Amino acid sequence: MADKKLSTFGQEVGRRSWAEPWKIKMVEPIRLPNKEERQRAMSAAGYNTFLLRSEDVYIDLLTDSGTNAMSDRQWAGLMMGDEAYAGSRNFYNLERVIQEYYGYPYIVPTHQGRGAEHLISQTVIKAGQYVPANMYFTTTRLHQELAGGIFVDVIVDNAHDPADLHPFKGNVDIEKLKSLIKKVGQANIAYVSLAGTVNMAGGQPVSMANVKELRTLCNGYGIKVFLDATRMVENAFFIKEREKGYENSSVANILKEFCSYTDGAWMSSKKDHLVNIGGWLAVNDQDLFDRLRNMVVVYEGLHTYGGMAGRDMEAVSIGIKEAVADENVRARIKQVQYLADLLMDWDIPIVKPVGGHGVFLDAGEFYPHIPQDQFPAQTLAAQLYLDSGVRGMERGVVSSGRDPETGKHRYPALELMRLAIPRRVYTQSHMDVTAEAIKEVYRHRDETLGLKMVYEPKYMRFFQARFEPIEKGAA
Ligand code: F0G
Image 1 (cartoon, helix red, strand yellow):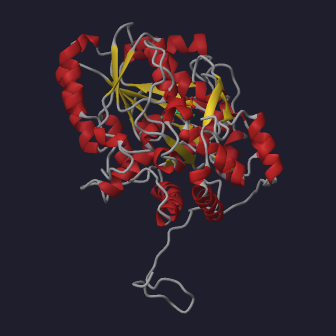
Image 2 (cartoon, rainbow, N blue to C red):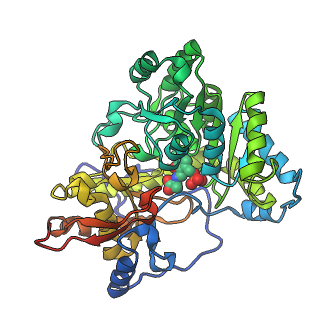
Image 3 (spheres, rainbow, N blue to C red):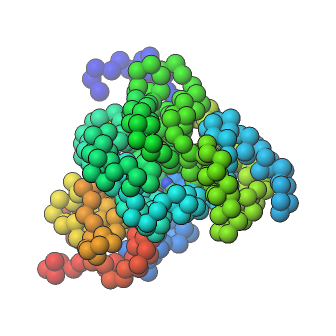
């Protein structure tokens, strides 16, 4: 750019880059399948990237869940696994670390996030009660509905607009929540389900001011607030970057303060905690803890392992400490921003501001000629794989599923294709290759047609649904 002063090496003068606070000790080879192989793999997968074999994928941005690279410390921790059925040392380590960094006293381990969602939903929700939330997440809402809950979205309207630059698009709209409470009565609210960051909105954060206000409101009505803490470390980083008064606080302190305004949390450790498997539930109330601890032995395993091996719990404990280090989360989020910046430079429509765990392409804007019932985001994920072997995921009408009452598609305002970035796995060059592939797919956007769904499973259809391309003239 003309206004930047360049050195003799072409570097911007005065520029100071960020870099990862680690170096690479072991590598895993990956391979780009050729065009025919990609075409074959995509048809065999029914145009659903969840049904591709990972061996057929070059750069895998399907999810940041369980796909993270562990550190040498975490691998060493695996060797310290105490695989006792009851009372494993690793459980007590994990309990201590969660108490220290998240602040909740009572901990129930689970095999992953949805194990925890199942337990809390079945234990706390009474059939017919409402569960207000800052947007839905697929597994979270399903467990709430299976427990008889009625989900109500109370996120701020800004979250539904991909171009809205509000810095905290994950916030709860306090007025929407108030009017719901007034309408149905506080006894008919199971709890407020709060997530930081909000996955389906594009990884958007909740501000500290908002959670404080929510706490005050809920105190007034005696309503509990439970937190989906899956990506709360990333949320804490955004508070540090964007919210006045927190510039000089550590991510660890922000995380703990935020959690202090909630009554408990569930966690998919497969994200923030830099591991491949694991999760937990944590609460402040001892009676609730006793009930959850009793449920865990029915569905997950004994209350000192909850579906995890001892070694897995050790890797989570070490991962929590690594995750909250400011330089770790900074490098993670800046890598996501690096990819987003390339796309924005080329005017490719993405959700803004850029979220914590990935870049979300606005497929509605990318393919304005493809109607939502021909699955623009699903189409975009398929086209990207066909072009370059890069795997992303649909986060639009397919993920949104059907309304349990009417059986009709739920048409979300956001029709997105997510490129989730695993932590500590890919380099900046992988981001370059990905951005260039998207640019190529964008160049061919006008000639791209949508998909039709030819198989639809009952639950969480996005995982297993199958599609076929719509032929020219058939649309
Ligand atoms: N909550 C959020 C916000 C999530 O993103 C996920 C998982 C869960 C709960 C459930 O946790 O997978 O450990 O059972 N999200 C993954 C994703 C699957 O790709 O975004 P889990």
